[in-house]
Every structure is written in C-alpha cells, then in structure tokens.
Length: 113
Length: 220
Ligand SMILES: Nc1nc2c(ncn2[C@@H]2O[C@H](COP(=O)(O)OP(=O)(O)OP(=O)(O)O)[C@@H](O)[C@H]2O)c(=O)[nH]1
Ligand SMILES: [Mg+2]
Ligand SMILES: [Zn+2]
View (cartoon, rainbow over the protein chains, first blue to last red):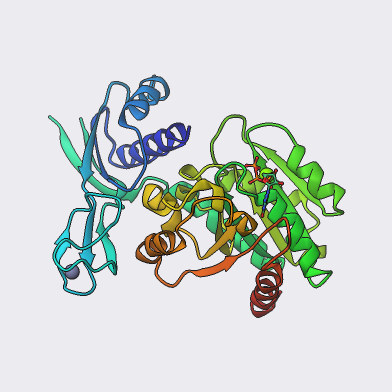
C-alpha cells in the first residue's frame, strides 16, 4: 500500500517545517487532496499513529481538505463536476474536455505550539 | 498558543527530488530509460521480450524488473540475454525513486543505450511516483476492457506513450475502441499510441522504430 510512503512524506515535510520554525509540538496538519489523487484517509491516519510516535507530531490531527474533481469543456467553456463515466459536457455534449481541478496533493499548512 | 505555518509543498516532493537525481545519473551515462506501467498480466514482460526481438540489435538494452516478490520476470529477461536486475518491493505496490536509485548502479550502464523498467503490476499507485525515467509508458491490454481510462484517470494522465497490447484478441473480446480512445483523448490529448500484439508481433516494428528514433534524438 502506498499510503505508508505517503504518510512518511507528510511526516517528513511537517517535521522539517516545524523544526525550522522552532516549534515544540505539531497539533494539526492540513492537507489538500484532489478527488483524482488516490489516497485512503483512514490508512493514512492509521500509519500516522504509528510512525509519528515519539516525534513532536505525535497525536497531531490530520485534516483532509478534499477538492472535488472539475472539468472544463474546450468547446463551450462550461465548467462541471464529472458525474458519470463518460466525461461528457452536460451543456453541449462535447467530449473534448479537460481536468481543471482535482489533482491536488499537498501539505497546505501545519498548526504548531 | 498555536500558530499556523503555511507550507504548500507537494506530498511526494522528496520522491520527486530523488527521481531528478536518477535522471541526472542516466543522462550523464548517456542512457535513455522508460518506465513501463500496467495492470498485472497486461503483458509488460512479454512486450519487453518482443521489443528486444523487434529492435534486432539496434539498441543495447538493460532491464529492471519490479515485483512484490519473486524474480521470475528478471530471469525471463536474463534468459533472453539481457542484463537484468530484480527489485522486490516487499509488498509495496509501486516502484519509487529510491528503489531505482539502488538498482541503477548494478547495471553496466556504460554498455547500455536503453533501460526498460517494468513497474509493479498496478493501475493506481505507480502513477503517483515518478522514478526519474525519460518516458512513462502505459500498457493497456484488450481483455482488461474498454472502460479503464474512465476508472483509472490518474494512470492515463501520467504517461507520454500508450501501448494497446493483445490486439490479436480483438475478435474474441468485446472492446469498443472508440469508447476507449475517447476516454484517453480527454485525459491525455494526443498521447503517442501504438497498437500491438506481444504474441504475434503485430505492430512491434512501428513501436521499435519509434523507440530507436527517440533514443537517438536523446543523444544516446
Ligand atoms: N494473446 C495474447 N497474450 C498475451 C499478449 N501479451 C502477453 N500475453 C500473455 O499474457 C500473460 C501475461 O503476460 P506477461 O507479459 O507476464 O504480463 P505482465 O504484465 O508482465 O505481468 P506481471 O508482471 O505479472 O504483472 C501471459 O500469459 C502472456 O503470454 C498478447 O499480445 N496477446
Ligand atoms: Mg511481468
Ligand atoms: Zn460544452
């Protein structure tokens, strides 16, 4: 499962920034995750509880700000949420659309004491 | 008192940095490399062996095989006369840049033009981990069905080349090529596409010729 690698990266990034700021404790971690970025919240939290132990991030709460997928039609400019499996523009039925939101995968900020 | 520290850093940035180092190493050695991704059984290993045949000595190959366990695929490549390394990920569902960094120096890079990396069979996770190769290639096979672009958009978006394998099975398996290609076009407009059979060899020459051209243009 690649959630372990992902969780380790989140921890590394958080500890590095908290260290640079001279923080004593990390209380919250704010993540921004797009709908198209495959990751399972529960497993990240599960790994977190294990690997953050005995670091200043022990017990920190993970917040997943989920960004819904969004597509924009190249033909008519209409913006919509992909609902079914066809990715068709609901306004003009064009299939030349592009993904404009939902690929986010980043640590946005941390709260520290 | 809590304070908020803004970060805005890609979660896999450490892997991306390691991938960039792999790329430097390959470029310095004058070696071109491709990362072959696909679902289990799509025909990655078969494609590698057929590509070797179709290249007919035009490029010197090295192979890196990624699997959860076992060295079956590396043994197949070695039996075909290729320098081959097996990476066992020990349960990880993908190769990452650090694994490739360990494997690359064990290949005789000075005698190699092109390294073919076979990623772990999986349509989700490998797409998230750049490993530093010059090209990401997806092998889609006919029996998997024509709806895979819609179900695994991340994988279809992350590649520069799409190889449709097992086209010899088209007469026997329901597969709507138009529906499949429409999904591909939305996710990855204009992606370079080849249709091949790693069984009969159909379409292999086009793919191999393109590959030779690509490696030569890279100064390999
Ligand atoms: N009919 C047909 N069978 C194929 C083709 N390519 C591969 N196969 C068969 O598909 C099966 C799986 O092929 P592999 O090359 O082992 O697939 P793989 O993607 O390397 O599999 P893993 O490494 O286990 O994920 C084997 O039985 C191959 O003989 C093809 O083009 N046509
Ligand atoms: Mg294989
Ligand atoms: Zn439209």
